[in-house]
Amino acid sequence: MSDFTIGKLARESGCKVQTIRYYEQIGLLPEPYRSEGNQRLYDRVDVDRLSFIRHARALGFSLTEVRELMTLSDDPDRPCESVDLIARSNLTKVEDKIAQLTALREELKRMVHECEGGQISDCRVINILSDHGQCLTDKHE
Image 1 (tube, rainbow, N blue to C red):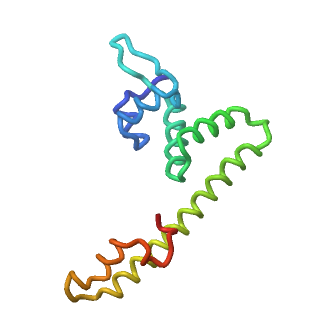
Image 2 (cartoon, rainbow, N blue to C red; image 1 turned 180 degrees about the horizontal axis):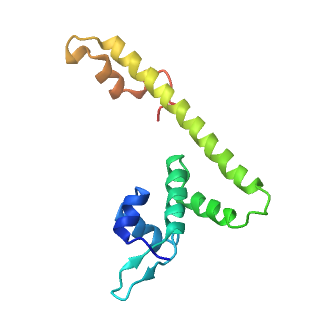
Image 3 (spheres, rainbow, N blue to C red; image 1 turned 135 degrees about the horizontal axis):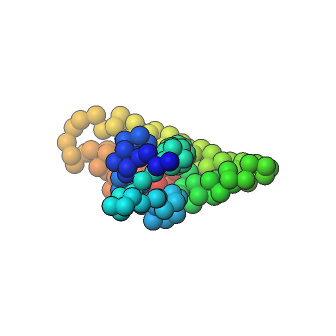
């Protein structure tokens, strides 16, 4: 039974209407049933599917990975090796990003500490930003 208009689906799922339409365009959500007035109508399965997509996206999975995970979840008797590989790959990306952000934080701390006032002509922040060679690491790129 189709209980949700696109507006109700948006409220129920926390997704914007434009996002729902986009997910339909790219095939993450199936084409919805249409009313006699051509209004999109959805059901609880669509709410659950959007919840899955939103949660996966919040955890950093790409739309391609989400599509693959959803396809894999449609075959519950299959071994989960493929899912594990996707999750491990994503974990590696997150760990790399954390390392990059940690290096960025340390570089910014150093720049701010070395500056601590004075005049622009002597400003370490400006000097370091002007000459990447003065950075301690290039991991913040």
